Image (cartoon, rainbow, N blue to C red):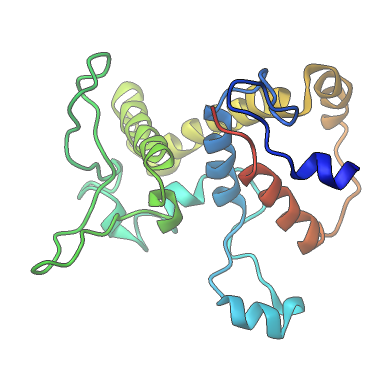
Length: 218
């Protein structure tokens, strides 16, 4: 009976029991962006199946925006303008009346009929339009921080952007996803530090990512 009930699709005119009207669709894509900041495994799916214990995360476990900054201007200069302070931006976008200065992500100049490739710290952030626009917005924010603060040092501007991003993750994204009651119960304990010494199991990390990818979209 339960299996039959679960297999029955919900009519489009009725709300789905699995949907959460308290979580807006944008959080799905923000979660995808955050996941790309924390995890990246370039190994092929065949290699993963042959030796799942050899999985390696090529991202740092911190919310440090390495999917934006890559390995920095000294190592991946193609992500940056010549001054090594500003991020490279893409072409101007049209149709945004509330943001006439909107820009896309930077792309290379393709040869012949080859498609233009996005120049990003993480190529996955160009897999869909919304995450790509989120990437572009953070690139622009970094440049505004450089101009507003008059930063002469890349790391100075980078830290300001990271702090704003971390605030959003902690005080907006997490509170929305886990619920305010749980968030308030856990938050005061963060300042006490943690005794956790090991990375979380790969299975749990993958499941968390899959859960985020299955969040219902409006």
